[in-house]
Length: 175
Image 1 (cartoon, one colour):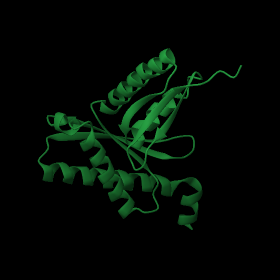
Image 2 (tube, one colour; image 1 turned 120 degrees about the vertical axis):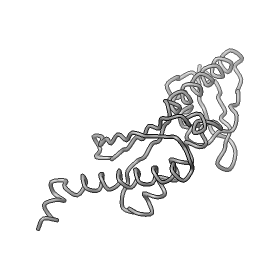
Image 3 (cartoon, one colour; image 1 turned 30 degrees about the horizontal axis):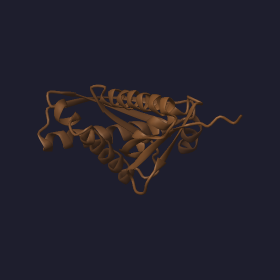
Image 4 (tube, one colour; image 1 turned 90 degrees about the horizontal axis):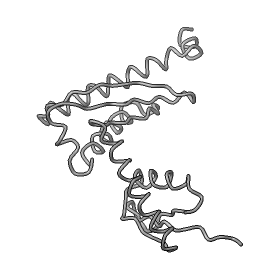
């Protein structure tokens, strides 16, 4: 009977959340210990209005420069590793996990938006298409979402495979 009531009143969700958090903590502790990194972390757990569980992990410590190196590839690798561990141990769990280090993700997104703004200006000034270098999906999403707010330009991913270029082009007037 208690299983039935825990499903109704959310007891199981809270337990799953703490189980995910414990798994993430154990995984990161082991990873940083084996890797010899001087890194500590703080976890923040949120449930949004759609009942989606989201855990944000902020890394800090003396080795943060190593973690941020290579355009955030190490942060992305750690995040992917932790997500796969959670998926393996808790296949029914749909928690979104984000790992950041010293605000790197926000800085990176802002740099992409700044470059998109510059290229948008060139496209509008010259009235021609301009191209953004090949990017992974998460970076393309940032640019497409930013450019979607301006009705004067459009953007489109071009190419095959994971890394695609972005075409930014002015909208033709329909007079």
